[in-house]
Image (cartoon, rainbow, N blue to C red; front, side, top):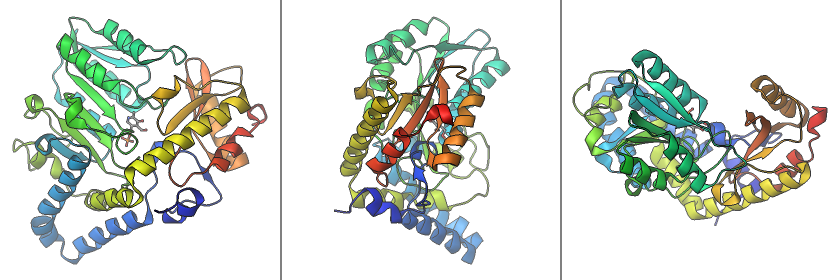
Length: 382
Ligand SMILES: Cc1ncc(COP(=O)(O)O)c(C=O)c1O
């Protein structure tokens, strides 16, 4: 069994001088997967035309099916996209909204997706309806209640994160899908952080739309993500870029959106093999335990709480900072930069609920000492 922590750090390209506690934002790709991606790029360059015509269709279908199998999604409604933002855009910009229709989302939503909702509302006359959920009060029932209260007769779509970005919480998405179904409203789950971090079963969730990243917690190269679409919507969803496959079905439309890099998608089987080699259950157990340790070390060092209750956390934790004064984005960014400049620790600082928070990730290359380094930081001196 391969070891975790510093022992496996060499499998990644990470700078050893940096405590990389931000796997959540952009992942970290193992060398083996980078090499596999580069192998596909080089193979393409030996005969680009032959590759596009003769190799690409079967290779992309194999990569797509491998990822669909891993997250247990119906391969017929499953397509690769470059990132979760692109997948969410495809859904939000394909659906039709009339003036006065409502799109319900939560205050914990990822900013880029929230901006997309705002854009769609601006261009269609639909109304964005935000469910505020204070981090201090949150639990599964509270999420259900709060989102439920925002659903009305004009609600045409609910958008919720599977694992929230600023607050690092696993939301009760199975119950939210049931709620949406009962209220007759389609639901889009933004699972950018879910694949790899939790044991994901897309078919069992049965949401109308599910987007997920492979380049965060599945060890894939940047540019590997998916969109899963329930049968009733498949003819109505199109990629943001319309290309040759238009009208020929989801796979034809999404598989080719113009000439692009082939490495990230085609090396997906290698990313899955990397996780398999370490053992997905072992990875999850290691990361969950390390994250719980990190949260408790930071909470006791800072004398502050983490967002939400412990059972809502997986490999990410957001802990409030012991700082008074403005809790806004410029200050959060300044602290983020100062933390790196002074301590060589990468961990995002976020403003949420009138407080500043630091968010840590736990991945196999992390170890306890790295969180202790963060716990020792005097934030008021940054
Ligand atoms: C909930 C959520 N959705 C979407 C994204 C965007 O992911 P990407 O940049 O891969 O599109 C993130 C990134 O952190 C996220 O946390």
